[in-house]
Amino acid sequence: MEPSTIDEELDRTETRLADVETALARLEQGSYTLCERCGGVIDDGQLALDPTERTCGAHGEGSEGS
Ligand SMILES: [Zn+2]
Image 1: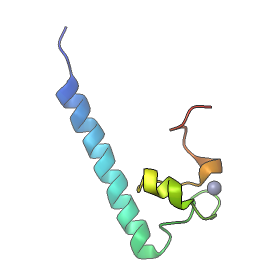
Image 2: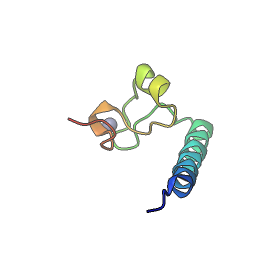
Image 3: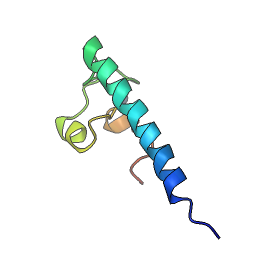
């Protein structure tokens, strides 16, 4: 059995980079703090936890379990 940590880490990093690029694009458009689902304002604390967050608490994409 071979640990695939480097591949997995690379995958995660690429996903992360895409998230950051999306966040920067949203920042330029002035929609950085707005939920992409409902247009509501994303909580400051939420953005502090994850600066690439694109949705408000009500529309999170399952990153937090219920
Ligand atoms: Zn929302």
